[in-house]
Amino acid sequence: MAPQKAKYLRFGIVIGLIVASLGYVAWAVIQETKSYYVTIAELRKEGDAAFSRHLRVSGNVRPGSIHQVGTHADFMMIEQDPQSKEVQTLQVSYKGTEPPPDTFKDNSQALVIGRFGRDGVFHAEEIQAKCASKYAPQQGTASGGAPSGSTAASSKGY
Image: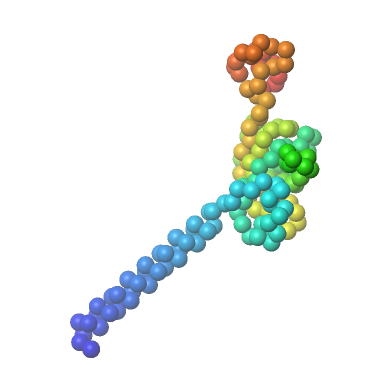
C-alpha cells in the first residue's frame, strides 16, 4: 500500500472513532435527561421499568402530609380515578437545593420530577405546584369574583 493511502486510511479511522465517540456521548446525555410523564396509577403499573427511568409524576398534595425542614420536604401525593373512585397514593421525598415553591400547600396540584426508589418512595429533585383555588371566585361573591390581587382574595392567606 502506498504511504499516501496508508496516511488517509489512518486519518479516516481516527475521524470515524471521534464521530462514533461524540455520537455515543450525545446518546448517553439524551437518555439521562429524558423523563417520562406518568400518573400515580401508571407508575404503579410500570413494574421494574419505573426504577430505571427519570420520571415526572402528577397528583394532589394530601392535606396534613407535608413535613418540611429547610429545603427538604416529605409529603404524600394522591390521585383519584374518576371512574372507579379508587385513590392512589405516592410517598414523595424532595431533597432539592431550593425550598418548595410558595404555591406548594395542602390540596395543591403538584408535579414532581425525579426517580422512583425500590423503597416505594419517589425521590424528587424538583417540585412544581399550583394552587387551583387561588384564582377561583370566593363562595357567595358575584360571578365576576374578586381579582386575584384584591383584598378579598388576599384575605384567604394567598
